[in-house]
Amino acid sequence: MAVDILVTTTEHLPGKDYEVLGEVFGLTTQSKNVIRNLGASLKNVVGGEIKDYTKMLDEARNIAVDRLKQNAADMGADAVVMMRFDSGSIGTDMQSVAAYGTAVKYR
View 1 (spheres, one colour):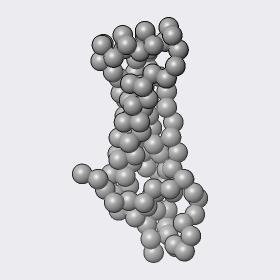
View 2 (tube, rainbow, N blue to C red):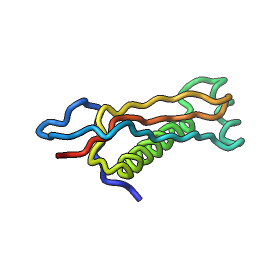
View 3 (spheres, helix red, strand yellow):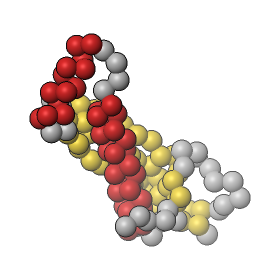
């Protein structure tokens, strides 16, 4: 269920007056199955994009943003400003993605 919350990387929303509610986050950690990891290892030998990992990161980013929106909605927010991503590896086959920003409520 998608939450209808505006998410922007800008600091200000033109034409909107709002109050800051606080920080919001969306986190996820993803990995691929053993077969996909084997395929990625083989691709690593010849070079080029590892499409399964690109897809995994895209999915992780979308999940993190959905969770960020839900966190903001739970706080009663109308929007999230200054949204950013952070990511990092856990071991050799897991990737964590965090979406974070500031929840705001329109006045």
